[in-house]
Length: 213
Image (cartoon, rainbow, N blue to C red; front, side, top):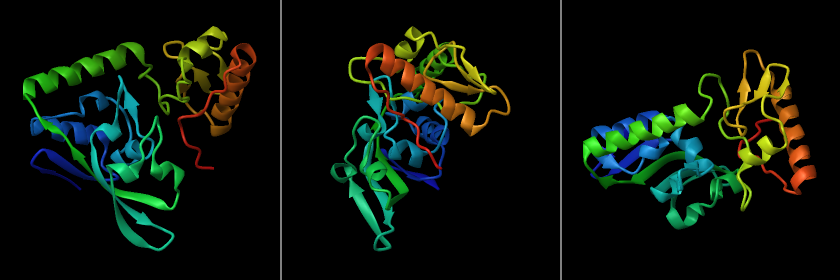
């Protein structure tokens, strides 16, 4: 479920980011334009504090409703309790907190200007990211003072393939599924990248993605 309340948007965790940004546009609400083109759900974006272009989900969060599996109670986390950090949150560090819904605090804006920004972000992503193949998005966090993609490129790993998984030539922090890639292929590429970057630059890359097994 997704509904607008004044300048706020209430969304259940399973609502897609694309639906959220479209609803914001329809209601002249600014603040989510930068999320245009990001796959996944609002719950996942809050969990990992998704971000781009110097912005992040935590910038717009008013409150998050969770189920605490330790005591099976529903709880409300205000912004302070969410403890957002770079691709991090209280929910990521406390697996007992299951995100159910989020209330985003946005700002009233001009519909044409909001739509223009959305188109600009989509254009940028189309130009700079490999959207023609499935992927999990950015694999690694950017280490302090570095860009993960640049480190991977400088190790000569762009285009490297294992099975049907491939490190993108367009954006080296993306691992593409060329069709039929297996999880083990992707994990082998991730391991290779971490080893090469550590050896050449002494930098330890940390995954932005989450493993389910």
